[in-house]
Length: 103
Image 1 (cartoon, one colour):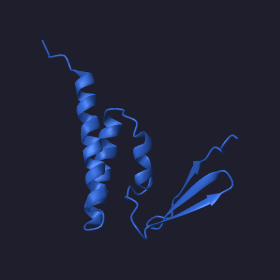
Image 2 (cartoon, helix red, strand yellow):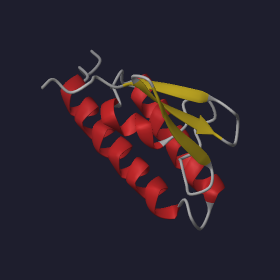
Image 3 (spheres, one colour):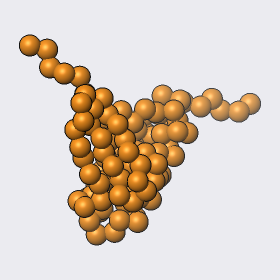
Image 4 (cartoon, helix red, strand yellow):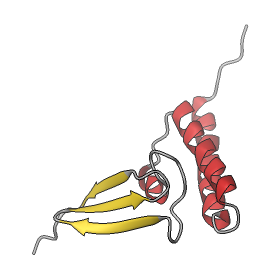
């Protein structure tokens, strides 16, 4: 009889690995940009496999080419009610909606 999978434990371990990989990518992106991209790629792959939402962590890298945003590699503009982040590596524009402050 096969052993039963412990899905909660697997998800917990996967979350820890994703956070570790993304933190390492942020640390190493100045020295080795390709390795940082590989870390992001692995983190996204783990998140997809275990169906884990990245939430706030996904603003640190390009959605299309998975390169972490580093100095001189992206542009941030504010237009109307959104922030537009342009990746210089692939040209992808991520539009993040911003809610106006209520006074």
